Image (tube, rainbow, N blue to C red):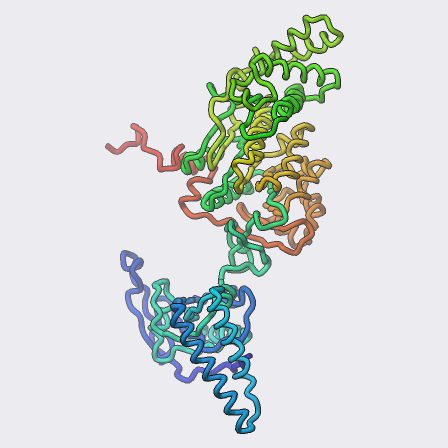
Length: 615
């Protein structure tokens, strides 16, 4: 390992000169400074001064994120990393020559009886290892240049900042040398121009270059697979917080926050960024917040409750087993229990099961998959079978008539719109959004259950296996019903087996923490996101997620979009972050009414009305 380098004193101090005046505002502000003054070791800019350094020496071994101390320096420091790949043929030839020189020097020292040069032996071992890795195609070689530019407002402040930066560099065993008499070239090398005019370079292999990846979070060491997602910037450093839910033990997540903390905004950002990587997403949207995003990416939008939109719960999925009809009959019991807002009694279950099977038989559908292409029965057909059973005079006749009467609002009454006809739009595509805004409050839980059932049938299709994410926004509306909570719990337990993740988003943490099923959903979520919490629930959240006093205080005072990303409860994998979106992503994800009014319904600036049109 290279020796620790002492900090060098400044040999050529700049002459005391009047500072440059800032240029006037205008087009030149975009193009660059109006004037610069170049000194031997610094460059004076309008309103400040800077000094640049090139890293000439590196430690023999580095760990992941070893540039983090420079990136989190409490001052303005520009860090530039210039990378140039070396062609494999040239790299192999140079490695062979270097290895030959080192081995020849070692043999010559041994023949003359000299002491062994341990530095040369270590270099020979490294060269042999690199040559073997290159020959097997496991890596490549790169010329890498690392440069720093320190900014300050005065020369005295610059001297102090330079000493601090070089001290940090020395602690990393980096030899940072000033760009003496090349101060202008050093400054331009750290600008985002892609031009390395200093050319102080070192050869890195693939592993060493990957360890120099500058965008890391010091609090989070995630396992990033094929679908990493940028959540935002670390709240306490300059690093970024990236997380891959599909690289965890399970793919589920839970997001808890009070109203207005930005939970839906963050969820839509993750949805959009997963779509970039080929993940199929299905969303249960209670407030129609995902419509603009769905239209922008060409997804499928189903506005349940809107005129002409129907979703038949008795549709039979293709490619399933021979027990598909039986499974549909069993789901009908869960659906009717949710409609009636109470569990079915055993006699009622038996009557309903016979009515559903009779409705399928009346349409010519049996357990034979060849009959499944025929039109599926509707809820009205099941009600008609219940009426027939009520007229049969059997002991279960009264039970059948009572059940049919209680289903009347969904068959012929005010709630019939969703079940009045066959499915109007097949829920398929890379993004499917089930909007529940147009559903009455009394049937919203039923609509959410139907949406989850349609999603579940897509997940369990063995002919269409791919990465999927199921987003249930405002999940408290489903958790407050026993049947809905059980269905969500089953989805959380089984989604991983079908290469899918469940994202539960809710503002009512009490509904999750107060029930066994809700706590089980949290326990089966390897990714947990906590945004700003209300003081009334902060204590329960802190106990459930084993938060420290500092983390609890952060969640109580967090701004909109700030949160805490956690691994499994009790894990040390935690990072405080601030959500970050590009301007285009912001247009698709914002739900601020004032901003939407300015932008218009489609996410573009609204056209002026006739009264305000200047024409």
